[in-house]
Image (cartoon, rainbow, N blue to C red):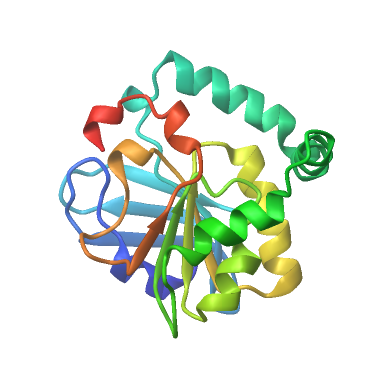
Length: 193
């Protein structure tokens, strides 16, 4: 997580946007480990390997808990298996992703939030339409770790967050576009959205 990212954040618990930051480890402008604390409610959020964890546990109900466990286990094989199964049933995952991202009508330097970013399969497609920052949120730490590998390998301008879709850790009106492909199936409380 980059230090300037804090300017886009709001506490997912109380929605305040005044934080204290303790950095344990930093590489260049990236905070690799530390803690972000809300000065309003006192809730603390850890930063580990550059990913800010904003999960509010009381929002994680049984279906989300189970799906998170399964996706954490599935993460190392996700890209390979999804491509294989797609080809098996005659679907092109890349063509599907392109069609959905195209509908966002991105251009220039849009700020994009992808909820349920998974391993980051949409990032290269978003990059074809927008050079702006991408913020990715997922409840699965395993999926985020795979995504982070790609982000670092390709040098993408992407900030990753572990958190709930029901209580996003961002200020209102921070993004030009929001993308979600299928993640809503696993959200604990769809009415909150």
